Image 1 (tube, protein in one colour):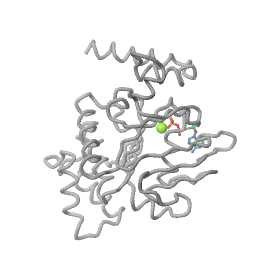
Image 2 (tube, helix red, strand yellow):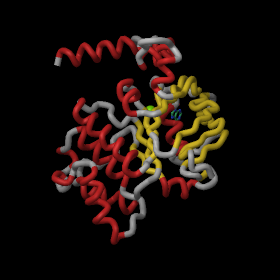
Image 3 (cartoon, protein in one colour):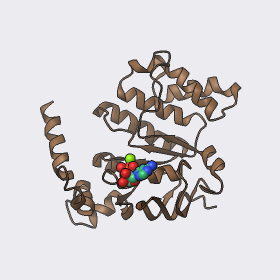
Image 4 (cartoon, helix red, strand yellow):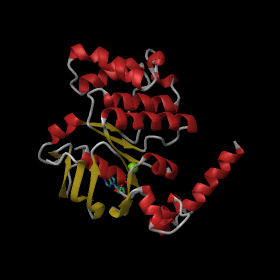
Length: 267
Ligand SMILES: Nc1ncnc2c1ncn2[C@@H]1O[C@H](COP(=O)(O)OP(=O)(O)O)[C@@H](O)[C@H]1O
Ligand SMILES: [Mg+2]
């Protein structure tokens, strides 16, 4: 086991029939850092995360998370990880506290510790005053914060978040960033997240990997990836350079980003 790297994959591959969704990906994530996975829709980001969280068995290759092999020691891996899926995972018909209690049971938090851990998670995610409201009355940002709170109850060493800030307004997005930074700095938590948001990738992640049709195209720090292309290059330019041609359908990433910026100015 290597404690320098909380996540290590070697030639990790997942096939669905003829489709190779993740194609021989080898990467390492340093313990206590935030790592970003970038890629167009269908690039294989969620499939990679599902293998690392033991929800999907690899077709080939191997991966270790928190020192344990995902295929041979899935229970040990699950004990050390938290997972915030791409789709909403909190139940709107329950309060935040009730959702957290369900998760505490699911993660086998000992019953005497459930109350204090739930209070701590609510406090950490700034949700204490809303704890007894039904989640269906929550904003998108509050739901995301609750989902992160759910994933922290058993104090995981490694946290996986699949598109954690999609659809959040800028203030809610900043709140999530602040909590993730604090997890890293206060508890040494390793974070692997996927994002389409280049500003998020640039400011939050120490290391990035760009996936394209299942293959790892390039990885490095945001600064390294930009410097490799030249002066005054933005991370958007890096992304377009590596995967842009794949995004012909429905306009390029650059068009989408430009439209979004225009929309923001009009608000
Ligand atoms: N359970 C599945 N069965 C068949 N194909 C799948 C399944 N899950 C994902 N795929 C396919 O694998 C590819 C990668 O998907 P995904 O990992 O969800 O990409 P991303 O998260 O980067 O958008 C896509 O072509 C998708 O349609
Ligand atoms: Mg996905």
